[in-house]
Image 1 (spheres, rainbow, N blue to C red):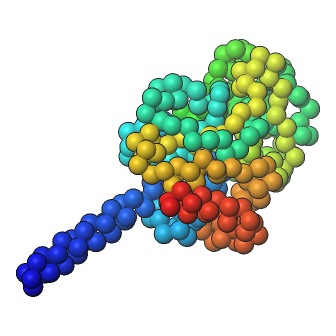
Image 2: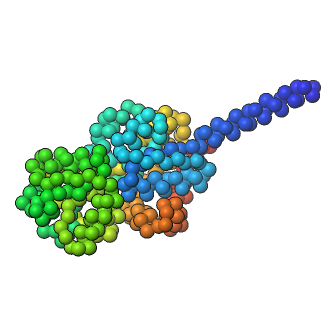
Length: 287
């Protein structure tokens, strides 16, 4: 009898250890992101909310093409900054068979050429006649970004005589700030939502040829195998959505914070209902 009880105890102990190990692996999420303000904000918010519910969250930062490849290949699980139906169409066509769209996290997004309001032109068609005003250059972000691909198309379609310069988002914003502070003309590749529209009075140049498309939605995509194995996390991201005011205030909070986590925690304190609602999906889906 003692031997039977001993064997039973060992079996139960092994089962418990195995169960704990599975729980640990089940509660790990890897989120890929690009250094774009809205994506950083949503990624950091997701990380804090998931960690509050006991998840281990790893972040992987890269340019947009490697990010899509990582999520499709299973090296990352989720990406919250997919612009559709125009900006990231080619990536979804390439990797879409291994990705699942979990939902739209932001509506009415847009991309295009952006200038300060004091610049006296309103359309992309006016750029050539005023090329010297801008030093014959358009200040862009990282090469390979969706907005950069569309910017290259715009240069061809409109026959622009301006050079598209690639740089980091931070470098582009530094040039924008310097130009606005000096009231100098500048044209950049821009997108909304972005806190630069809160910091400065800017406008999108009209795009009669619709090269940049109309308004877009920002979607959350995930690796299909990950979704099948993690219903509770999938449910969380399916319901992860911010409106213009919420995302704008979150980006502004992070911009002025000592670090992203502190900024998110401060923002959550000001938006407890949203944080509680999102966390609830993890709890209910896990039951």
